[in-house]
Length: 235
Image (cartoon, rainbow, N blue to C red):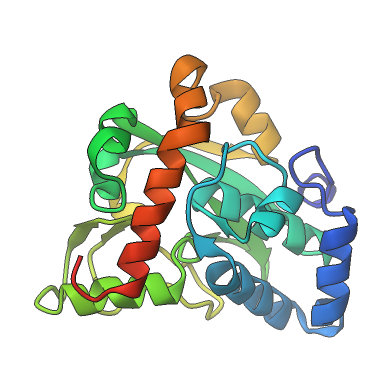
């Protein structure tokens, strides 16, 4: 299990801000179940759904931003879990970009690759690996979507969601798998010790001019749109 507890360039859990957070939350004094649950809830709801400058930023930068998407929120979740002694690993995929339609619109949607790099975190608990994906969307954002589409109870794809149970998705930590985008997965890259290893093998979502446009223009439009969705009940 030692390799699933190591610090890496991306999982920079010895950063002062991460240590300060862990001390202030007193996570190290909790049981294993409570450690996972409390950290999971923090990443799910205190780190809002949004788009950072890159998938490959370190956990400390995600914490500083205060927002993230599947890959970057997963980075922070992994760093915090490892810092308190919980083994975890990275599972990489791609998802169809139609899952993001609504959250991403106009030019940003056109620029997005058809298949978007996606990931979830696998945590080792009670001698088994458990899939954690339900932390990606903060509940305020998800609740706004549910209020905006009250007629939809079952399958829903869009606005960062791909689930077969939109009314009651499996997103809370109860000692078992959690999901919110699983139904949009279209390719499985398998498991990796850490995000660093995955990005070294498969890269991230954008490069070249598209990456520059995304960093300085596109993601700001995306985050503005996500904020508007979070605050209104009728996208």
